[in-house]
Image (tube, rainbow, N blue to C red; front, top):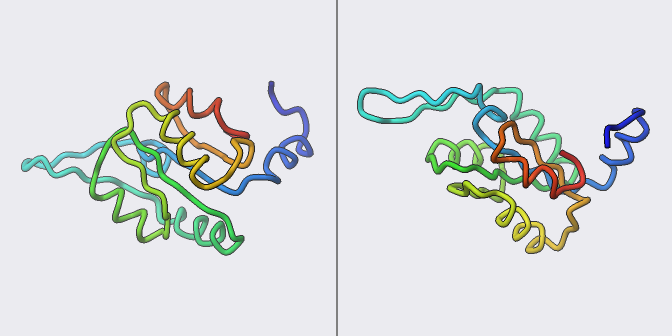
Length: 129
């Protein structure tokens, strides 16, 4: 089901109203760094800030859907004005479907960005993966 032309990709992108991303490896460099006290550090990229700012200015919504629950993610989400932060969901399809329903959207209006096997059920649920 690969896209064959830029026009096909544009057609799939046009209805997107909600951008949902995983965290580790998508919004971060993929490292999970623990200090001697067990405090976790995440390395977020500064350029995501501009991307989310432009996304919100376009009137679009954003969400984070992560299998882990880390305070740094909630803080970064607040900085990026990401209203929907779903953490601690190892199985991502059901919480994603619940969010889509709660927001009154259809799956084709959602883009999900993930990078690992646990993301596959969510990736096949949405209109753009």
